[in-house]
Length: 309
Ligand SMILES: Nc1nc2c(ncn2[C@@H]2O[C@H](COP(=O)(O)OP(=O)(O)O)[C@@H](O)[C@H]2O)c(=O)[nH]1
Ligand SMILES: [Mg+2]
Image (cartoon, rainbow, N blue to C red):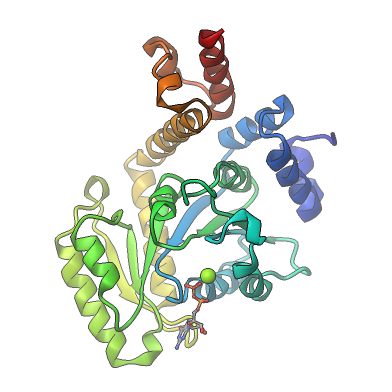
């Protein structure tokens, strides 16, 4: 296997990153892969944004507009588009839209689609690992997921900040939020503001839905409308996402949150391999250990395996 370290990755550009992602996909338990991921975990450069919302709301178009804005600020951007279609269909759903987003000439923009997990419909293990790796290399890592079912909850376990997109003229998603079925986002945006009245009404409804929402640790959810097509509201959108990040940082919550997400990932990953029954065999004093998540997952997995033999 080729050299897998962060410094080589920083210098190796998109080809090196693609190779590293392939190595993670092929053998996530290879000690070299685990070491690379933990090194990335300890050296965050950027911020992870999760973008979610129903199909057709305009997420990918918005990501495209955000990419242009971020790149004009010379920020390095990576995008993971989580394909809701299964692995077997080969990610055909997203392929077309991704071509609009990626620019082979731009070394500081990396776009990848990844299949959602077949079994539970949520984010694949690989998505979390890839996002952590990209966070060490890029200023913004944008993860686009379809806001239905498990993947919407999973993106909250991955992103620093979650943006939820609302379609003008459809109150469905707001009902979910009111009913507490949906994870509360940090920023909620009505898309396609250029359509006029329907978008204004949706913003009003959104305000109503959010007035009942319990926000994370006292963060007041920002809401706005924007249009990827006309550019209206995009500056406010970016400001809102940056404000949430600054807010987390100022309160010392960013590291706490990332650590908690890592613990959740370790548990979910162990459950996937060993089931609840297997995880129940872990002695309590082994679990709460300040340790990098990828090596920790391996260590705890070995303890469970040993308990069966
Ligand atoms: N009028 C208008 N249409 C938009 C806007 N953004 C996206 N769309 C359209 O909405 C449709 C779905 O967009 P897409 O980005 O693929 O949505 P996704 O499924 O949420 O990723 C496409 O036909 C877009 O052209 C916008 O700002 N204004
Ligand atoms: Mg899309």
